[in-house]
Image (cartoon, rainbow, N blue to C red; front, side, top):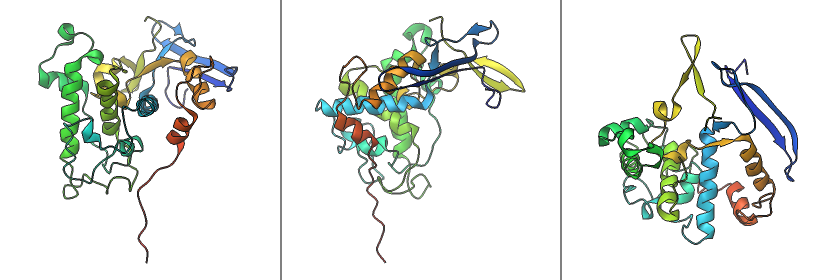
Length: 265
């Protein structure tokens, strides 16, 4: 906690039967008011969000609504994929679409360009206009990348390069195909960051949030995350017996996949 300049941390170890083997809470959810953390305190999950996106995509695959080998442009026509070989859904899931890291298209930029005011539209996390304009902006950014301008690392499937933009578009596939807005209490942890040697609170969703939620906008609690982990430990079955994803679907999520074949010499 001290080494990471963290104000508060919630930690747990859980077994496949849902039994908590270790659980401890450090620090505060609100440093100024010295409010404690418990298993129901809401934390931002950052890029753990991507695992939920992957799970949701696999649910759509098993429902016959999405094919991992389909080009992303089939579901997101704004993404023309004009400068590369076809980027398939699984390429974005595996961070192998061939893009170098790029400028983060944040929600405030999209709102400003679109002339949107949250006081009028309501929470941007559930605003369709933000989702559509964000999708267009991210798609245009990706489509502008070429080998000549240094934006492409290689053909899709050849190299791994972490891509927030890809998971942003995957979450838009979920919204469009699945009909779900997946990413949108007093017991919520405040995000702090070090500014000029002082831990300062901020509004993370508005300050630096990616315009498409699938890159890292989900929030959850330790209590719910323990259930989530148990589902994976039981190969897609929740601790209450509910089947969330097939065993093969979970194995597909964990199985390495790559198109690259080294040249023979």
